[in-house]
Amino acid sequence: MANPTHKSATSVTLAPLAEKSTFELFVSKYWMHGLGLFLAIAGYVIYRHQAETTRQAARDKSWEAVDSRTDLAGFPKIPTAAPDVMASLATELKGTDAGPWSRWLEANALLGERKFDEAKAALDALKAEYPEHPLVKQVWAVDGTSESLVTAWASGIAARKAWEEQHPSLFANPQPAGDAPKVRLKTELGDIEVTLFRDRAPEHVQGFLDLAAAGYYNGTKFYRIDLEMGVDGGDPLTREDDLSKWGTGGADKVLPYKETGLYHFKGVLTAAAGTGRKESLGSRFSILTSDRHDMDGQRVVFGVVTNGMDIVRQLANAAQASDGVGRPEKPVVLTAVETVP
Image 1 (cartoon, rainbow, N blue to C red):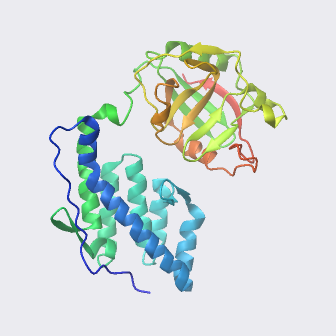
Image 2: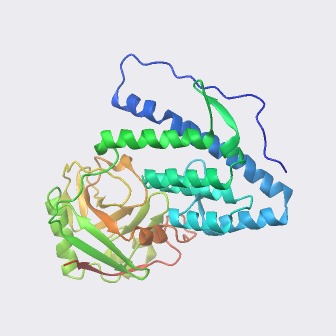
Image 3: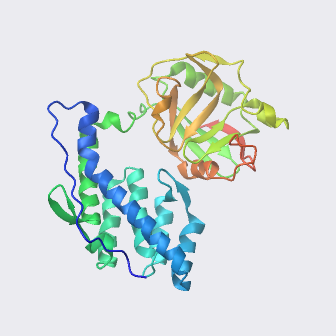
């Protein structure tokens, strides 16, 4: 079935603001990117619907390949995977119905990791490989300018890159100090390397290092997972068979909450909140797979993953048990936490 065509252009006009707050400035920079992404998702939904209803063998095969190697995440739910997975799919599915969308989703995945130049390169590849595809050829009127979704999104990426460079603290934590301690979380799936913010959260870092040196974490399990949040670990009770106790241990090791100037961006190591309003559990922790600023001011960030985020994503993406609490069906063991020389 042919791709849908739009009988009339879509026009979007934003009213000027007399005085712009930081948030309003942020929105004014992002509106084109948001519109382009929204239209792309809408087009994807329409296209996917066609792929499912026409039941053409070649079309089904290409979409099944995407389904088998991606997960539905975000809002609205769209296929999501690491950029290298999407790049591989785009290459393998070149010339199929799912091929251009795989390239588009590769750009989306790269943008999610703030790899702006690589995201633009993926869009350039989409234009070169599929010059007649609606994403490339179909023109929309956006605030008086007529351009394709790919062109509009490329402009949005360039604007976002410039905005982030001007306001770095809005999008990432400062880099750890040059002499910051590093630890390696050894798991059955592979190693996760974390650099610790000793200069900003000294008590949390020292407590974590002391527990690691004492073998406190050896044999514990990651007891809660969520692809859109992250993974939870550090509970000594996960060594036991009583699943009802998982996620309740470590309450004997409490630290006071500390303002660190660090925020809950993807990839951070953050202490679990205690029962008190402003306290941390000294042993339990989370590693985030997405930005979670609802935790800012509630929990203490004290580290950041510097190698092994692919392992974290594998942990978070595992099948969950049917008990509805986010427990993994097959919990992964944290075999050791070692200091990196």
